[in-house]
Length: 423
Image 1 (spheres, rainbow, N blue to C red):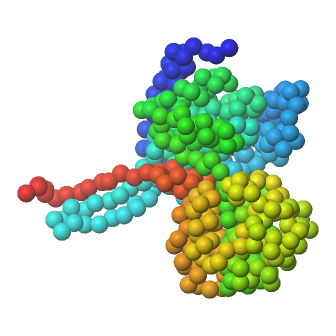
Image 2: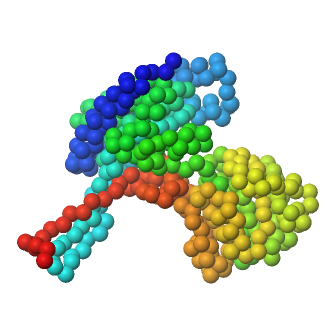
Image 3: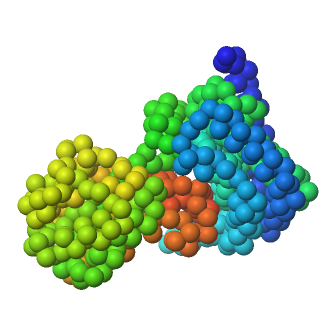
Protein backbone atom coordinates (compact mmCIF):
# COMPACT_ATOMS: atom_id res chain seq x y z
CA UNK A 1 0.00 0.00 0.00
CA UNK A 2 1.40 3.37 -1.03
CA UNK A 3 1.42 6.32 1.30
CA UNK A 4 -0.60 9.46 0.82
CA UNK A 5 1.29 11.71 -1.61
CA UNK A 6 0.51 14.78 0.52
CA UNK A 7 2.06 13.12 3.58
CA UNK A 8 5.31 12.30 1.80
CA UNK A 9 5.47 15.80 0.29
CA UNK A 10 4.95 17.29 3.76
CA UNK A 11 7.65 15.02 5.19
CA UNK A 12 10.12 16.09 2.52
CA UNK A 13 9.35 19.79 2.99
CA UNK A 14 9.90 19.56 6.76
CA UNK A 15 13.03 17.41 6.39
CA UNK A 16 14.49 19.70 3.70
CA UNK A 17 13.81 22.87 5.70
CA UNK A 18 15.54 21.35 8.74
CA UNK A 19 18.39 20.18 6.48
CA UNK A 20 18.73 23.65 4.95
CA UNK A 21 19.04 25.19 8.42
CA UNK A 22 21.62 22.58 9.40
CA UNK A 23 23.57 23.13 6.18
CA UNK A 24 23.73 26.87 6.86
CA UNK A 25 25.12 26.15 10.34
CA UNK A 26 27.65 23.65 8.97
CA UNK A 27 28.86 26.13 6.35
CA UNK A 28 29.76 28.66 9.07
CA UNK A 29 31.08 26.10 11.53
CA UNK A 30 34.85 25.77 12.07
CA UNK A 31 36.28 22.76 10.29
CA UNK A 32 37.45 21.31 13.61
CA UNK A 33 33.87 21.29 14.92
CA UNK A 34 32.69 19.32 11.87
CA UNK A 35 35.63 16.96 12.40
CA UNK A 36 34.66 16.51 16.06
CA UNK A 37 31.14 15.55 14.89
CA UNK A 38 32.60 12.97 12.50
CA UNK A 39 34.83 11.47 15.18
CA UNK A 40 31.91 11.36 17.64
CA UNK A 41 29.77 9.61 15.01
CA UNK A 42 32.59 7.09 14.51
CA UNK A 43 32.71 6.52 18.27
CA UNK A 44 28.94 6.03 18.43
CA UNK A 45 29.08 3.46 15.61
CA UNK A 46 31.74 1.53 17.53
CA UNK A 47 29.77 1.74 20.77
CA UNK A 48 26.60 0.54 19.06
CA UNK A 49 28.25 -2.17 16.94
CA UNK A 50 26.23 -4.99 18.61
CA UNK A 51 22.93 -3.18 17.88
CA UNK A 52 23.99 -2.47 14.27
CA UNK A 53 25.00 -6.10 13.66
CA UNK A 54 21.76 -7.26 15.32
CA UNK A 55 19.68 -4.99 13.08
CA UNK A 56 21.58 -6.30 10.08
CA UNK A 57 20.81 -9.88 11.09
CA UNK A 58 17.10 -9.02 10.89
CA UNK A 59 17.66 -7.75 7.33
CA UNK A 60 19.67 -10.86 6.44
CA UNK A 61 16.94 -13.14 7.85
CA UNK A 62 14.32 -11.39 5.69
CA UNK A 63 16.61 -11.61 2.67
CA UNK A 64 17.28 -15.33 3.21
CA UNK A 65 13.53 -15.99 3.56
CA UNK A 66 12.93 -14.27 0.22
CA UNK A 67 15.87 -15.84 -1.59
CA UNK A 68 18.44 -13.90 -3.62
CA UNK A 69 21.93 -14.01 -5.06
CA UNK A 70 25.01 -14.60 -2.88
CA UNK A 71 26.56 -11.40 -4.30
CA UNK A 72 23.56 -9.32 -3.18
CA UNK A 73 23.61 -10.97 0.26
CA UNK A 74 27.30 -10.13 0.62
CA UNK A 75 26.60 -6.46 -0.19
CA UNK A 76 23.89 -6.45 2.47
CA UNK A 77 25.88 -8.22 5.20
CA UNK A 78 27.47 -6.35 8.11
CA UNK A 79 29.77 -7.99 10.65
CA UNK A 80 32.03 -6.49 13.33
CA UNK A 81 34.85 -5.89 10.83
CA UNK A 82 32.57 -4.06 8.40
CA UNK A 83 31.08 -1.94 11.19
CA UNK A 84 34.61 -1.05 12.33
CA UNK A 85 35.47 -0.17 8.71
CA UNK A 86 32.54 2.30 8.66
CA UNK A 87 33.82 3.94 11.84
CA UNK A 88 37.39 4.02 10.53
CA UNK A 89 36.10 5.62 7.33
CA UNK A 90 34.54 8.48 9.32
CA UNK A 91 37.79 9.00 11.26
CA UNK A 92 39.70 9.10 7.96
CA UNK A 93 37.29 11.68 6.53
CA UNK A 94 37.75 13.79 9.68
CA UNK A 95 41.52 13.72 9.07
CA UNK A 96 41.23 15.13 5.52
CA UNK A 97 41.94 18.83 4.83
CA UNK A 98 38.90 21.10 5.22
CA UNK A 99 37.41 21.52 1.72
CA UNK A 100 35.68 24.75 2.79
CA UNK A 101 38.93 26.45 3.84
CA UNK A 102 40.02 26.81 0.21
CA UNK A 103 40.50 30.01 -1.77
CA UNK A 104 40.23 28.72 -5.35
CA UNK A 105 41.39 31.94 -7.02
CA UNK A 106 42.44 35.43 -5.88
CA UNK A 107 43.07 38.39 -8.16
CA UNK A 108 42.89 42.17 -8.25
CA UNK A 109 41.23 44.04 -11.10
CA UNK A 110 42.83 47.17 -12.64
CA UNK A 111 40.27 49.27 -10.72
CA UNK A 112 41.61 47.92 -7.42
CA UNK A 113 38.76 45.47 -6.65
CA UNK A 114 40.13 42.31 -5.03
CA UNK A 115 38.08 39.25 -6.07
CA UNK A 116 38.34 35.87 -4.37
CA UNK A 117 36.63 32.65 -5.39
CA UNK A 118 35.95 30.64 -2.22
CA UNK A 119 34.76 27.03 -1.80
CA UNK A 120 31.16 26.73 -0.64
CA UNK A 121 28.89 23.74 0.20
CA UNK A 122 26.19 22.73 -2.28
CA UNK A 123 23.51 22.71 0.45
CA UNK A 124 21.11 19.77 0.79
CA UNK A 125 22.04 16.42 -0.78
CA UNK A 126 19.53 13.61 -1.36
CA UNK A 127 21.18 10.17 -1.26
CA UNK A 128 19.16 7.24 -2.64
CA UNK A 129 20.92 3.91 -2.28
CA UNK A 130 20.13 0.21 -2.42
CA UNK A 131 21.58 -2.79 -0.65
CA UNK A 132 24.86 -1.63 0.91
CA UNK A 133 23.95 -0.22 4.35
CA UNK A 134 27.45 1.25 4.85
CA UNK A 135 26.69 3.77 2.07
CA UNK A 136 24.63 5.71 4.63
CA UNK A 137 27.67 6.20 6.88
CA UNK A 138 29.93 7.07 3.93
CA UNK A 139 27.42 9.62 2.60
CA UNK A 140 26.94 11.17 6.04
CA UNK A 141 30.69 11.55 6.50
CA UNK A 142 31.45 13.03 3.09
CA UNK A 143 28.49 15.42 3.22
CA UNK A 144 29.26 16.63 6.77
CA UNK A 145 32.92 17.18 5.94
CA UNK A 146 31.98 19.32 2.94
CA UNK A 147 29.39 21.33 4.92
CA UNK A 148 26.35 19.73 3.26
CA UNK A 149 23.27 18.27 4.95
CA UNK A 150 22.07 14.91 3.62
CA UNK A 151 18.69 13.18 3.45
CA UNK A 152 19.14 9.42 3.11
CA UNK A 153 16.77 6.88 1.61
CA UNK A 154 18.14 3.34 1.83
CA UNK A 155 16.76 0.22 0.23
CA UNK A 156 14.00 -1.86 1.80
CA UNK A 157 16.40 -4.83 2.06
CA UNK A 158 18.74 -2.89 4.38
CA UNK A 159 16.08 -0.93 6.31
CA UNK A 160 16.90 -2.12 9.85
CA UNK A 161 20.65 -1.75 9.27
CA UNK A 162 20.30 1.73 7.76
CA UNK A 163 18.21 2.94 10.73
CA UNK A 164 20.64 1.56 13.29
CA UNK A 165 23.56 3.25 11.51
CA UNK A 166 21.66 6.52 11.25
CA UNK A 167 20.72 6.41 14.95
CA UNK A 168 24.40 6.00 15.86
CA UNK A 169 25.50 8.87 13.60
CA UNK A 170 22.74 11.13 14.98
CA UNK A 171 23.78 10.33 18.57
CA UNK A 172 27.40 11.18 17.74
CA UNK A 173 26.44 14.50 16.16
CA UNK A 174 24.26 15.42 19.16
CA UNK A 175 27.10 14.74 21.57
CA UNK A 176 29.47 16.97 19.56
CA UNK A 177 27.05 19.88 19.20
CA UNK A 178 26.60 19.40 15.44
CA UNK A 179 23.00 19.84 14.18
CA UNK A 180 21.31 16.45 14.11
CA UNK A 181 19.23 17.54 11.10
CA UNK A 182 22.46 17.50 9.05
CA UNK A 183 21.88 13.74 8.57
CA UNK A 184 18.28 12.53 8.23
CA UNK A 185 16.73 9.32 6.93
CA UNK A 186 13.34 8.74 5.29
CA UNK A 187 10.90 7.43 7.91
CA UNK A 188 9.97 4.32 5.90
CA UNK A 189 10.78 2.19 2.86
CA UNK A 190 7.75 3.15 0.76
CA UNK A 191 8.76 4.18 -2.76
CA UNK A 192 6.72 7.36 -2.32
CA UNK A 193 9.68 8.76 -0.36
CA UNK A 194 11.90 8.29 -3.41
CA UNK A 195 9.28 9.98 -5.61
CA UNK A 196 9.06 12.93 -3.19
CA UNK A 197 12.85 13.37 -3.20
CA UNK A 198 13.02 13.21 -6.99
CA UNK A 199 10.31 15.88 -7.20
CA UNK A 200 11.98 18.07 -4.57
CA UNK A 201 13.10 20.98 -6.77
CA UNK A 202 13.95 23.93 -4.56
CA UNK A 203 14.20 21.68 -1.49
CA UNK A 204 17.07 19.37 -2.45
CA UNK A 205 20.08 20.74 -4.35
CA UNK A 206 21.53 17.48 -5.69
CA UNK A 207 20.42 13.84 -5.84
CA UNK A 208 23.05 11.08 -5.75
CA UNK A 209 21.78 7.58 -6.59
CA UNK A 210 23.98 4.64 -5.58
CA UNK A 211 22.87 1.26 -6.82
CA UNK A 212 22.05 -0.81 -9.87
CA UNK A 213 21.36 0.43 -13.35
CA UNK A 214 17.56 0.36 -12.96
CA UNK A 215 17.71 2.65 -9.89
CA UNK A 216 20.06 5.11 -11.57
CA UNK A 217 18.01 5.20 -14.78
CA UNK A 218 14.79 5.79 -12.81
CA UNK A 219 16.40 8.66 -10.91
CA UNK A 220 17.81 10.22 -14.08
CA UNK A 221 14.46 9.89 -15.87
CA UNK A 222 12.20 11.23 -13.09
CA UNK A 223 14.30 13.72 -11.12
CA UNK A 224 13.33 17.40 -11.13
CA UNK A 225 16.55 17.99 -9.19
CA UNK A 226 20.13 17.85 -10.60
CA UNK A 227 21.55 14.30 -10.47
CA UNK A 228 25.16 13.22 -9.90
CA UNK A 229 25.52 9.65 -11.16
CA UNK A 230 26.73 7.19 -13.71
CA UNK A 231 24.43 4.61 -15.27
CA UNK A 232 27.19 2.36 -16.65
CA UNK A 233 30.92 1.81 -16.50
CA UNK A 234 31.60 0.60 -20.02
CA UNK A 235 35.37 1.10 -19.84
CA UNK A 236 37.93 0.44 -22.60
CA UNK A 237 41.63 -0.40 -22.59
CA UNK A 238 43.37 0.36 -25.90
CA UNK A 239 46.67 -1.42 -26.54
CA UNK A 240 48.46 0.76 -29.09
CA UNK A 241 51.07 -0.49 -31.58
CA UNK A 242 53.74 1.22 -29.46
CA UNK A 243 52.88 -0.70 -26.29
CA UNK A 244 55.44 -2.51 -24.16
CA UNK A 245 54.15 -6.08 -24.44
CA UNK A 246 54.75 -7.33 -20.86
CA UNK A 247 53.28 -4.08 -19.50
CA UNK A 248 50.21 -4.41 -21.74
CA UNK A 249 49.60 -7.99 -20.56
CA UNK A 250 49.92 -6.96 -16.90
CA UNK A 251 47.63 -3.93 -17.26
CA UNK A 252 44.90 -5.72 -19.26
CA UNK A 253 44.81 -8.65 -16.82
CA UNK A 254 44.42 -6.28 -13.86
CA UNK A 255 41.97 -3.94 -15.61
CA UNK A 256 39.64 -6.82 -16.46
CA UNK A 257 40.08 -9.40 -13.71
CA UNK A 258 41.19 -7.68 -10.45
CA UNK A 259 37.52 -7.17 -9.55
CA UNK A 260 35.13 -7.80 -12.43
CA UNK A 261 32.05 -6.27 -10.75
CA UNK A 262 33.37 -2.74 -10.15
CA UNK A 263 32.42 0.09 -12.48
CA UNK A 264 36.08 0.77 -13.39
CA UNK A 265 36.66 -2.76 -14.73
CA UNK A 266 37.60 -2.86 -18.42
CA UNK A 267 34.78 -4.35 -20.50
CA UNK A 268 36.30 -3.95 -23.99
CA UNK A 269 39.88 -4.47 -25.18
CA UNK A 270 40.91 -2.55 -28.30
CA UNK A 271 44.20 -3.63 -29.86
CA UNK A 272 46.06 -2.27 -32.89
CA UNK A 273 46.13 -4.55 -35.94
CA UNK A 274 49.91 -3.97 -36.20
CA UNK A 275 50.54 -5.95 -32.98
CA UNK A 276 47.42 -8.12 -32.73
CA UNK A 277 49.09 -11.24 -34.16
CA UNK A 278 52.10 -10.91 -31.87
CA UNK A 279 50.34 -9.90 -28.61
CA UNK A 280 46.64 -10.84 -28.61
CA UNK A 281 47.17 -14.60 -28.12
CA UNK A 282 49.26 -13.94 -25.00
CA UNK A 283 46.67 -11.52 -23.56
CA UNK A 284 43.83 -13.98 -24.23
CA UNK A 285 45.83 -16.84 -22.70
CA UNK A 286 46.57 -14.78 -19.56
CA UNK A 287 42.91 -13.87 -19.12
CA UNK A 288 41.66 -17.37 -19.91
CA UNK A 289 43.85 -18.76 -17.12
CA UNK A 290 42.22 -16.23 -14.76
CA UNK A 291 38.75 -17.51 -15.72
CA UNK A 292 37.76 -14.96 -18.37
CA UNK A 293 35.73 -15.67 -21.50
CA UNK A 294 35.49 -13.56 -24.63
CA UNK A 295 33.42 -11.99 -27.40
CA UNK A 296 35.58 -11.04 -30.39
CA UNK A 297 35.07 -9.16 -33.64
CA UNK A 298 35.94 -10.69 -37.02
CA UNK A 299 39.47 -9.26 -37.08
CA UNK A 300 40.29 -10.63 -33.62
CA UNK A 301 38.89 -14.01 -34.68
CA UNK A 302 41.16 -13.81 -37.70
CA UNK A 303 44.05 -13.93 -35.21
CA UNK A 304 42.44 -16.47 -32.81
CA UNK A 305 39.71 -18.37 -34.74
CA UNK A 306 38.36 -20.22 -31.68
CA UNK A 307 37.20 -16.99 -29.97
CA UNK A 308 33.38 -16.65 -29.79
CA UNK A 309 31.98 -14.06 -32.21
CA UNK A 310 30.88 -10.72 -30.77
CA UNK A 311 27.53 -9.17 -31.65
CA UNK A 312 26.94 -5.43 -31.93
CA UNK A 313 25.19 -5.59 -28.54
CA UNK A 314 28.24 -7.18 -26.88
CA UNK A 315 30.20 -3.96 -27.43
CA UNK A 316 27.39 -2.06 -25.69
CA UNK A 317 27.36 -4.42 -22.69
CA UNK A 318 28.78 -3.67 -19.25
CA UNK A 319 29.58 -7.28 -18.35
CA UNK A 320 30.25 -6.76 -14.61
CA UNK A 321 31.70 -10.26 -14.72
CA UNK A 322 34.55 -12.29 -16.29
CA UNK A 323 33.69 -11.59 -19.95
CA UNK A 324 35.71 -9.33 -22.26
CA UNK A 325 34.74 -7.89 -25.64
CA UNK A 326 37.68 -7.61 -28.09
CA UNK A 327 38.04 -5.49 -31.23
CA UNK A 328 41.04 -4.96 -33.51
CA UNK A 329 41.50 -1.35 -34.69
CA UNK A 330 43.80 0.63 -36.98
CA UNK A 331 45.36 3.32 -34.85
CA UNK A 332 44.30 5.95 -32.33
CA UNK A 333 41.52 7.56 -34.38
CA UNK A 334 39.73 4.25 -34.92
CA UNK A 335 40.07 3.43 -31.20
CA UNK A 336 38.59 6.83 -30.31
CA UNK A 337 35.74 6.32 -32.79
CA UNK A 338 34.92 2.94 -31.21
CA UNK A 339 34.90 4.46 -27.72
CA UNK A 340 32.73 7.38 -28.85
CA UNK A 341 30.23 4.96 -30.40
CA UNK A 342 30.00 2.39 -27.59
CA UNK A 343 31.40 3.97 -24.43
CA UNK A 344 29.61 5.39 -21.38
CA UNK A 345 31.96 8.35 -20.66
CA UNK A 346 33.41 6.60 -17.59
CA UNK A 347 37.07 5.50 -17.84
CA UNK A 348 39.38 4.69 -20.77
CA UNK A 349 43.08 3.74 -20.89
CA UNK A 350 45.81 3.62 -23.52
CA UNK A 351 48.90 1.43 -23.22
CA UNK A 352 51.80 2.73 -25.30
CA UNK A 353 55.40 3.98 -25.16
CA UNK A 354 54.56 6.50 -27.94
CA UNK A 355 54.06 9.88 -26.25
CA UNK A 356 52.41 11.49 -29.28
CA UNK A 357 49.89 8.65 -29.59
CA UNK A 358 49.14 8.86 -25.87
CA UNK A 359 48.64 12.63 -26.08
CA UNK A 360 46.26 12.24 -29.03
CA UNK A 361 44.26 9.62 -27.16
CA UNK A 362 44.09 11.54 -23.86
CA UNK A 363 42.96 14.69 -25.67
CA UNK A 364 40.48 12.82 -27.84
CA UNK A 365 38.67 10.82 -25.14
CA UNK A 366 35.55 12.51 -23.75
CA UNK A 367 35.27 10.36 -20.63
CA UNK A 368 35.47 11.39 -16.98
CA UNK A 369 38.82 9.63 -16.53
CA UNK A 370 41.54 8.85 -19.10
CA UNK A 371 44.71 6.91 -18.18
CA UNK A 372 48.03 6.27 -19.88
CA UNK A 373 49.89 3.05 -19.03
CA UNK A 374 47.72 2.18 -16.01
CA UNK A 375 44.73 -0.03 -15.18
CA UNK A 376 41.21 1.39 -15.50
CA UNK A 377 40.58 0.01 -11.99
CA UNK A 378 42.42 3.08 -10.61
CA UNK A 379 39.21 5.07 -11.18
CA UNK A 380 38.53 5.28 -7.45
CA UNK A 381 38.43 8.10 -4.91
CA UNK A 382 40.87 6.38 -2.56
CA UNK A 383 43.35 5.76 -5.39
CA UNK A 384 43.07 9.42 -6.43
CA UNK A 385 44.01 10.50 -2.92
CA UNK A 386 40.54 11.89 -2.17
CA UNK A 387 40.41 9.82 1.03
CA UNK A 388 36.76 8.94 0.52
CA UNK A 389 34.32 8.61 -2.35
CA UNK A 390 30.55 8.86 -2.62
CA UNK A 391 30.49 7.47 -6.16
CA UNK A 392 31.66 8.09 -9.73
CA UNK A 393 30.10 10.80 -11.90
CA UNK A 394 30.00 10.66 -15.71
CA UNK A 395 27.80 13.70 -16.39
CA UNK A 396 29.12 17.02 -17.62
CA UNK A 397 27.83 19.29 -14.85
CA UNK A 398 29.33 19.63 -11.35
CA UNK A 399 31.82 16.82 -10.61
CA UNK A 400 33.20 14.18 -12.99
CA UNK A 401 35.02 10.97 -12.07
CA UNK A 402 35.45 9.97 -8.41
CA UNK A 403 33.35 12.23 -6.13
CA UNK A 404 35.02 13.06 -2.81
CA UNK A 405 34.59 15.91 -0.34
CA UNK A 406 35.98 18.63 -2.64
CA UNK A 407 33.64 17.56 -5.45
CA UNK A 408 30.61 18.23 -3.21
CA UNK A 409 31.47 21.92 -3.03
CA UNK A 410 30.72 24.78 -5.37
CA UNK A 411 32.03 28.32 -4.89
CA UNK A 412 31.06 31.92 -4.30
CA UNK A 413 32.85 35.22 -4.84
CA UNK A 414 33.96 37.69 -2.19
CA UNK A 415 34.83 41.13 -3.58
CA UNK A 416 36.68 43.76 -1.49
CA UNK A 417 36.78 47.38 -2.64
CA UNK A 418 38.11 50.71 -1.41
CA UNK A 419 35.10 52.81 -2.40
CA UNK A 420 34.87 51.98 -6.12
CA UNK A 421 31.69 52.84 -8.03
CA UNK A 422 30.91 51.85 -11.63
CA UNK A 423 31.30 54.56 -14.23
